[in-house]
Image 1 (cartoon, rainbow, N blue to C red):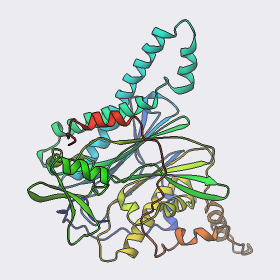
Image 2: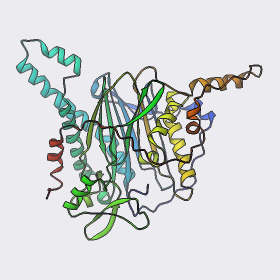
Image 3: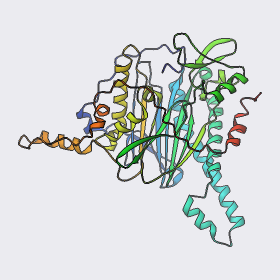
Image 4: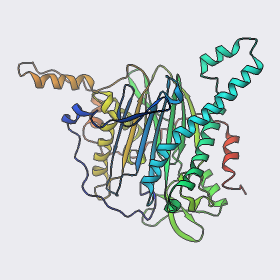
Length: 424
């Protein structure tokens, strides 16, 4: 827990009230979407496979931003999701800037990679006819290394673009990013900082959380080593002994609580990098949905609690809103003397039919309200989910259910990051 920057001091008024049943009826009223480059871009709201919601905390202006691009890169089966958590004086502007520009830069990098693949097959396989098969089966046959190359290239260009376009106050402002591309039956995840992506999969009748990303904190040994080699410092302040931060060599600032981020140029010479971790997963029939959220959610809810809250939503369209409201409630319950953090979440459902644990009980409840003459029926809500859908329990520690997913092309990541530091 703890603020992203040690000097974060602004305060906001009262927290929004809890979500009641009445709000279920109006989940589409705040939809914000538009078309760009053949894709439908969504900043708020919900669609057939997506639910989005963000709520401002008590620390000032909401610095969380998010976006979903459907038909991404002009392909019908491709979806891009991104959640961005800003910090520092201009954190809200940085997160919005990344939200508005990173998807198009990544799309351009993907198109270039696809064109290279087309030229390769055109030169080597034109007479065999194998190109058509590869093209149809794997969307231009991009390799996993190519996917990582696109993410590395676009994140690097985005950071340089940010340095050119944003006010000099971004010298001590920045944002994290967790992005996901769903292309057919595969997921490609790029992570920068301490936001998180968690998959919900099914094992018979049980829902299992699979963490798709690593929280990139300064106290991870490999991250600490890079920072120290660049003369940055890593330690926890006395008032927050469990929160390790990056500090400049000769000054106790800015105290950044993550080891990778866009912006924060005051630390880019001292070990902070904008190189994403990239992970891949092939979707299985048991996989239900993915949740992308800022640390305002993960600081107070475990991975298991998050997937059960989403699965308990009466409808897909309000799943993210329900999750954020439960996170806000957990903040009040767990840390009554602390300022609630901004919370943002995207729920991406992977199939036509997804388990929603509470749908049947919700519809039964609404039906009972319409008629006074119906007999009282037994709720179908799973007893194990009662503490998740209802009052948050006492145990709110962050989960450690990190799956061992393959990292792609490690050598490429090192070459990309070498522009920011030189190993000793």
